[in-house]
Image 1 (cartoon, rainbow, N blue to C red):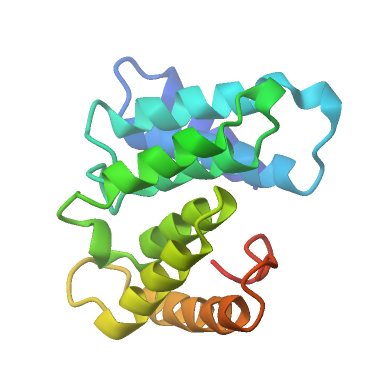
Image 2 (image 1 turned 45 degrees about the vertical axis):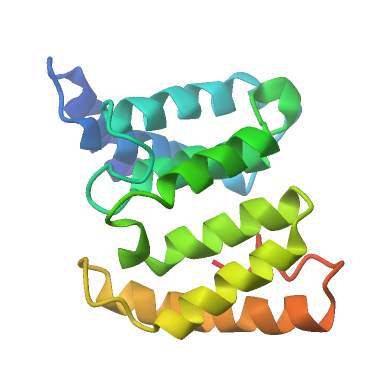
Length: 179
C-alpha cells in the first residue's frame, strides 16, 4: 500500500494529471483509514470526496471510466463518513440513483449492490431487495471488463438478498461481505 500511495502521489504531482491519479490516491488513503478510523481524521472524508469528485472529471454519476469506480467511491464515503465529516446518506442515495442511468452502470454488479445498500440505509428495504433481485436476474453482465469481479459480486448479492429476505429490518452485513 505504501508504494501504491507513493506512486499515486507522484502521479498527482504532474500537471495536468489524469483523473485516475485522484481515484487511486483517494482509494488507497480510504483503504488505509478504513481499519483505523478515529475522530482526529475529520478532514479525511472531505479530502476523499474531493479526490473522487476530481476523478469523475466532470462525467455524470456512473459514467466515469472505467466502470463508475469514482462514483462508487464517492457514494461509499458519503454513506460511511460521519455527518460532521461530510457524510450524507441522502446524497449517497441520490448519487447512486443518478448513476443507475449511466449506460455502463449495469456492467458492474458492485454498482447495483451499492445502490441497494444506499436505498436500504435510507429506509427503503423493499427497493434494496428489488435491486438485488434484479442484479441476480440479469446474471453475469456481458459488458465491461470485470468478469471475475462480477462473478464474485453476484455471490455477494445473493448472500445479501437471502439475509435481507430473512431479516428485512437488520443489516445484512453491508460492511462485511455484501459487496
